Image (cartoon, rainbow, N blue to C red; front, side, top):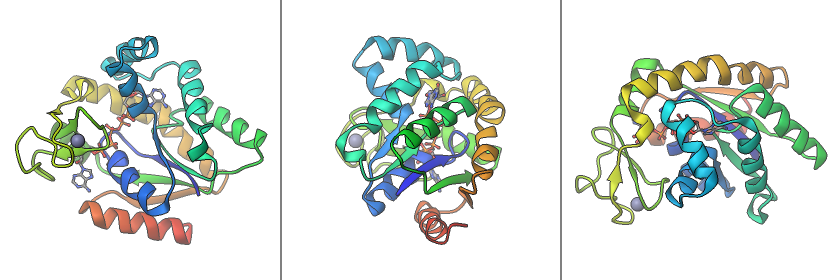
Length: 217
Ligand code: AP5
Ligand code: ZN
């Protein structure tokens, strides 16, 4: 399957993507995680991306699209992928369409995770991420690690993302409304959008997502 996951910051895209990718046996491709990996390796791309991410703005399309294309060209993505955080505006969606078209393939669904703003703000404020693997995500009250500050999965140090400050979150939400939400209409016109509520326990949301993907609604 080829799926795009969309939803406001903190809706649980990363949390759900990890689970869905495992169940559907497709790679989870997160442009946010790719940028963060570049930042921790201190690459040129990482240095460029950091200034935009810390401000809550989108990283320029040119570098983002090149990075996403590169990742999608890896052998594990040949038969499907779950895109998390890409595309994030209409020009990225058009670039993705062009790429898929040139390869004679199509998206199967765009899964839209809906969550009210007060909930996503709470989720982001309490989020803690593992330094060793950004797929290991916790929440200080909703899914606390057994030992404070330590990842249950690998023992890595848990930290708060630099862009999770209150001020940056406000910008990220605004950027989501103005730049990312229009892609939902873009994909709705292609009949691809499946909307589910991201509220409730993580496993329940995963079940809801799998059901919705199966039935296409
Ligand atoms: P990115 O990393 O994609 O961040 P985001 O879209 O803002 O989303 P988040 O990672 O904040 O949230 P999430 O929805 O994944 O939630 P999570 O599962 O962690 O992008 C970061 C930045 O990179 C962007 O601002 C931009 O600068 C740049 N960037 C990335 N892609 C780009 C692109 N294509 N173009 C340009 N720039 C780009 O969950 C949040 C918390 O809630 C966690 O603590 C979790 O444990 C908890 N939680 C999850 N589900 C539940 C639940 N059901 N109940 C209770 N708690 C829950
Ligand atoms: Zn870990």
